[in-house]
Each structure stands twice: as C-alpha cells, then as structure tokens.
Image (cartoon, rainbow, N blue to C red; front, side, top):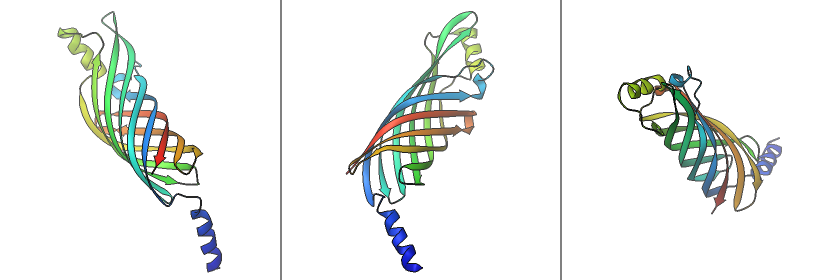
Length: 187
C-alpha cells in the first residue's frame, strides 16, 4: 500500500515544475464596482496590464505583481456629459493552488491606489455635488483577492494562461473584476 502511494505521488509530482522562479507579463479587461456609483448605474471598465515575479513549488505558486489600469465610464451631471476616469496602481501578493496540472485557484492580498476624476474638470458647487454623488476621491485601500486560472499552453520554459481575479476593497465598499491573459517565463 505504501509503495502504491509513493508511486502515485511520484507520478503526480512528475507533472509539476519542481522549483521554478518566473517572470510574469499580463494584460486584460477589468471593471470597478463601487457602492456610491450604484444609484447612477455607473461602472467604469477598461484595460489593465502588469508585470510580476514568482516562484513555483510543486503545486503552489507565490507571486508578487504590480499592475496599472485605467477604467472609464460615461456620466451625466447637471445636464452635462462627462467621462469618469478611475486610474489605479495595484500591488498584489498571491498564492496559486494547482488543483490539476493546468487549473489553479488564487488567493491573495492587494494594495490599491485609486485616483478618481473626470475628463472635464467640474468646479464649484457642481463639482462638490459630482464628487458626492459618485464618491469621487483619491484612495489608498487594501483588500482580499480571489480568483482562478487555467494554463492554456505549458512548455518547459513558458506558460500561457487565462486568469480571473476578484478584488474586495471593503474600506470603500467596492469590488473589482479582472479577466486577463498572460505569459510566465521560467528561468
């Protein structure tokens, strides 16, 4: 029985990279949901891209990523059209748990810097009303990150993957979704 379990574990481990550091490049499409914007049905969306480093240890990966995103949404305030801009810089520390060779779950922690503005500056009482209605302010927040991914192509020195991440930014009552594609280069 012990020999069978040992052989099974060796068989499973043969499919995993033993100990591989890597460089990660990714880009994707994301959305920002904030409670203060729900009444107006405003949901900024846009592109995000980033870079990271990590290390694969059998069925786990530890990653440190930094990403930049710009999410926009059309709004109307006091009869004037404008564009809401949500610029963000995000640093995330994540742990990927491989369920099978190519499918993984993701758990992590993120620090996010948000700059929320409008394309056309609005000043005075109208600007204060706009900031209050949409909850516009610059914030530095942290939160938990959950997600998952799938490696489409795995080669000895690289991996191409699809990944979904869900960020919970509870201090500003916001969530973010990011669907991305990326490439890991193992060295």
